Image 1 (spheres, rainbow, N blue to C red):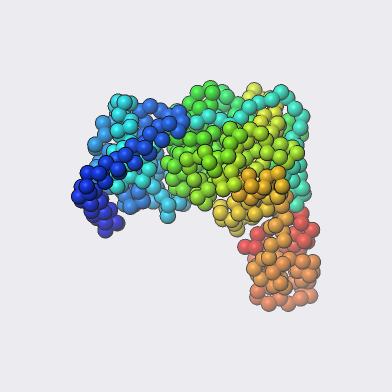
Image 2: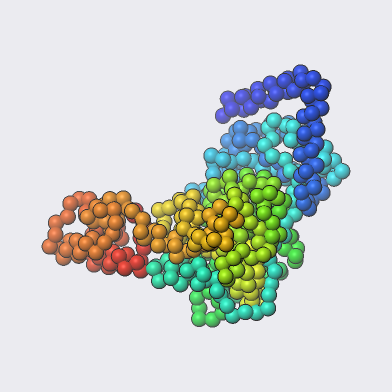
Length: 510
């Protein structure tokens, strides 16, 4: 660790000497380039006038962090406060984590992120220039303000989105979701008294990230609507989400009744999810001024991150500053109508947007224990989150990246979406489910008693003969036949394999 610090300092020293030896014209060109970069940032969108987000390089973050480096970065700037937004519990002794073994921090890509508040907002441009020129700083940018991506329509009794992505068909094949999977909703909170939501919400981890309290009451309605799409309870009334069972955790990031938030608050929310091991995050806010600092926060997080593409009707391959498609655990979602065409308001992009999902006049829960319909990419993203949660609940052997690939590789390919997103298609949960059932499995893994790489009726017959005592299995066959890992082969294992063959109950290879 000491050698990394020394190397970083030497690099800075060499760069300083090299730059100081440049001709004046070269230094002027560098200054002009930095000035252009800062000007572009300040013209990219609304931001907090006296706040800057600063990401340090890997070589001086986490395990390699030291007070001297941090002081040298911020010392030239007159600041009112400096707040650390991210934690690496494997390096930060001060990080409060209830279950250190269950955290989802990606240590390979981890960077420390700080929120710098200036004493004088007129110094914003100068401070950004200083930070960008600092060789220990990877990213410096304004703390942008973002808003929810949604509009609301009159009441409708149509949950067409469920059939469109194959929710019912997936339930019939055993993919209903489980409370083991935690979904964090970075939004405006939730209607804590809604009868269709209360049973699938965990209020012990729910948190108002901005105000630092446990009160996640939704005064806007946006977060409540999203929660219903993901996991409204199947209770015989109201609506139902894609998951019959799931654990939703409201992470309130809104600053006001309009639902506005800032990049710094979102980063704190992502960090919270990483520390508490929340599996999937939904962010349905406009990202027209995409933050590269937020991208780094998502790289720090080891779960799956899903966001909406935005409602400007633009090609964001051209108009976006960010490159979140370079972030492995991030999915960007556009919105479709019931006729499988792009909703006119939905942003699109052949390399930036990953896939589309229903997002026009979809029906869900609203504040005050009511229901209604709404439109926006805000409501397309949670359907992808919900589908990922269903798959994660049952295909427990898959990594976050494998879940993402399973969704993207099994969309419903549509001519109307060709060239508008990476996959050229719309979310299809049932396609992903079918892909799991048809996938080749490792020989002699659970249920594959004959070692063929697939599970068929012959496997169920062998298992039946084993528990009846009319067949003597090899050691490999015995392990494969003990599907529920009870230590003995019984009729339960037989039934599990029969149901798998009938595609009504799925179990992973291991």
